[in-house]
Length: 182
Image: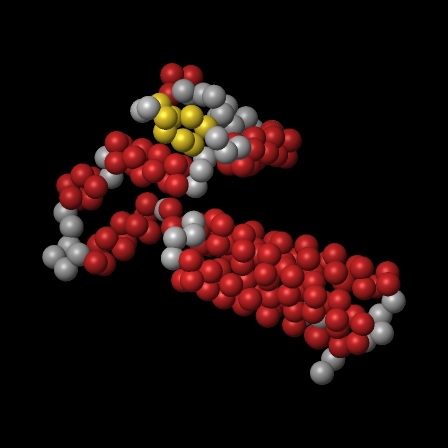
């Protein structure tokens, strides 16, 4: 086997480790939120990628500079793969069109347009999102009032907004915007 192709092996197996670790932790825990399970899978996959990359560099007798470049490159490529995998998982978990397709598939008699509209009224969508935010610790409910606790999603929104302004020269919706100022 060509040693150059051997360097790709950690990436391929690392991707499998990431997926299997996520599925395994979800099945074992039973209640772990999807994002935390994804993070667990990414950490497991990244450890595998970096560990095997270092081991292969050692076996091939690579010098320190080449080994560090290989570690950085494989780590960066794996981060991109993990990012893509996150969006693949998130698409199936949150997209309305995927949910509509599943509901249509599970309905033996089919659903009318009115049935679908009744399942997706704005109150129901807001209820689901608020429930998800509470379950992930992003908000808390105290005496009927909701308060933001987690900052990770807000931080991601601010970073994306900044990147859009810098690279696309497009303003995005302000985090504090209301429907009155759109």
